[in-house]
Length: 68
Image (cartoon, rainbow, N blue to C red):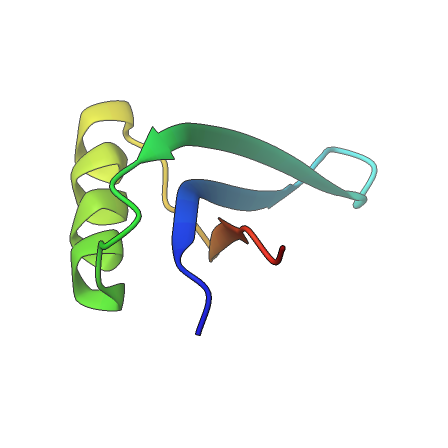
């Protein structure tokens, strides 16, 4: 199995504007520990949520691995 060499976490908050359209606000954190577990990523998103006051609707982990 190939080794993951980079981890980026993208946190997304979805809000409705005055016109009723959904607007996304995203925060992206790159160069995180590639060995981080799903629980650690969830904890990280909760900490960022507390610091910023935003409630994230989606947490995405983007993992990059070397194939060749």
